[in-house]
Image (cartoon, rainbow, N blue to C red):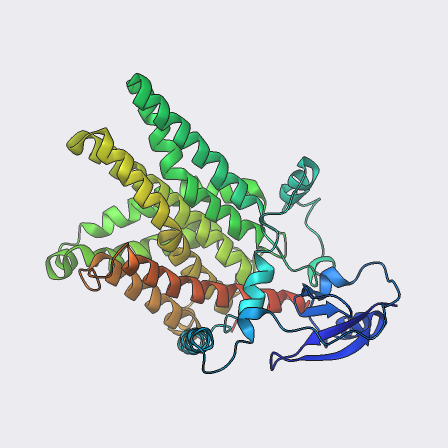
Length: 407
């Protein structure tokens, strides 16, 4: 029977243990499907869920494999120092926002399917969830940690379409090409990110139809609510462009609540999915508007550059910001009635205030001296640490197999 080394909480391998014992630990709740193991005689780390396959005899007593390279560097070296710094920063952010600390091994496992080959049947099964007849029980999915991959196909598909339309414009300068460039350039990254969070919805109780509805109507409603709030002039007079953080973040969250806050969606992962969909729609429509304005005022070359820059930065802004806000609210409300206590609960308030602070800084001149959009990548990196902390916390929530109750 196969035997495995188990990567412990101290980042050191223990064992080996037999496959049967590994399965028993999983059934008893002593291990998670996302925990990392390495088969005796192998060098690659895989998840427990991946390991529970056909058994085969071990091939003799091999040497102890090393942990993943980025989690066990030589302390005191430059790489080790950077990893220690990153781990320390991630821990501080997690503590400040009451989220799970992000570990490299979990991130690596989450994104491990992106470059693997997947056929059409897998894609169809991937999206045939969320209906009354296709929503699985929690017992069926509690140990099936999501590994999203289709979002990368959407990004590549729309990205190639944008490039093709751009080449067509350069060759023929036919104005009929420009709307297609605006649509593909504005929608590629936000739509891909919305699908990413849909793929991460481990309970599989949300349909693609609901996500697309929130993408369109949530994006529109978020923009309309924000425009209404912008009629209050004092924030803009006081803070300038940074006032958008005080207006747009509540506007988008209100759109999520109005369109999606239902008792049938009690999981933190549900809120992350809904928030990402609304934030993605908001980002796509906003980018299309900026692209049109830039084309009118600055010409098509400026429009193309605007679309490329905003597309590159969009995964670090509205999509992840609104996902955090909604995920944190769902974490405390569980789809139940919203009260003042829900919004005052620090497990919601602290992530939401971080989102507002990130958006405020994004629109300010602070840190503008960092080259190559470094300011936005830094702020986006912080946002993703918070979002991934909520995401991994959501996975652990589902793995318990117990319907959460409001806090």
